[in-house]
Length: 141
Length: 292
Image (cartoon, rainbow over all chains, first blue to last red; front, side, top):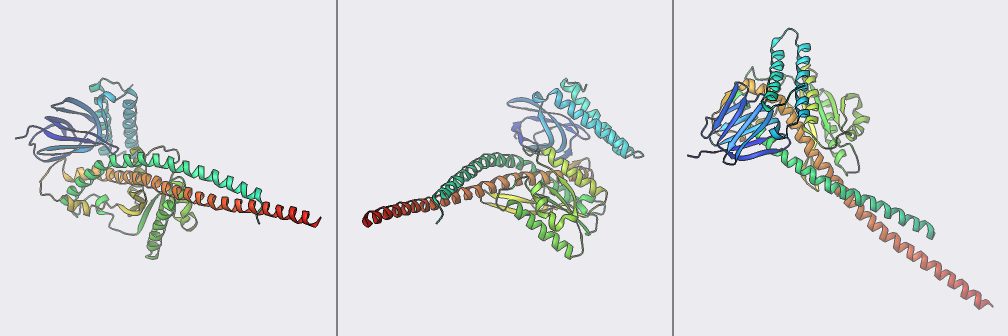
């Protein structure tokens, strides 16, 4: 039984990583999950968060927002709309992301006055963004 | 007979034209390499994205409650044509070919009694279509400030397309761009983006694996379809970028060669006229001497 999975992380602009991994921690839309070899086939959307890959070559972390992950028994493919290696994440980039999320929330509050759904979604997006900041030690202000 | 000075000036001017076209060709070659790389790096995302979309679409099928971006509005009246061209000319038939395809399609649609709306991306396509189809323009995206294609640019275009779709301004959206085959052939292509055309992907994705979905298929699909529009536009932009540079490179290569041929011809003509002038002068001197 193989104990590694083929892990691929792709953003629209390029392929960020394609390595063998023992386990991949994915920030799924309905909760974090860890995929290891022989995981049941699953497709999940992502929330903004930190993706952790640990493999024979050590562990790496990526900040991902928006997209989805496709998990099958021997491979994990993450397609993220934006993916940045954690060490390359700068305070400015993070600030831009947070302010984008804040704008979205403000926009949602304006457009959907009597519908809580989209407003809650936008608020969660912002909360997720801020949570990333706490996690990687960057502040939104 | 053209006089010697004029010929000399013409040779000089063609020579400097050749220098310019040669330089443009080399710049295009360098840019082409970069554009091709960008297009290749984006390919894995597009491929996988479409594969997953295919799987999802196959499992949701034509259900009544399928997202409207997949199912369509159920009407086929108003068509939005997104015509994607370059900001700059001097690239052979690149812009003209895309505009031609879009025009032909618009004419067909109008003949069928449908309403056409046109969004142009890139200045040249706008110029090419303005005379005949100017009254159908609804929007224009300016790319002149854009150095290289970024996903954010595609997202911007997609967002405005989706916004007018949500507002019920059209039923079907198609993009026109040039697919990059190789340096000498770029194929003007039409692709339907709304409702999403997943028939090919669905067949390819039919591998028989059963996936769990989290959240359910409907929710994922609703999340992915708008992204699919952006992805399609992004890959069209990249293909277009590579095609433009490829077309410019071969057009400038041709121009350089033609300038070379012209210089050769003019040089021969110049030498002949010079010879004739000398012969003439000699005859005059000799006949003058004989007359004495």
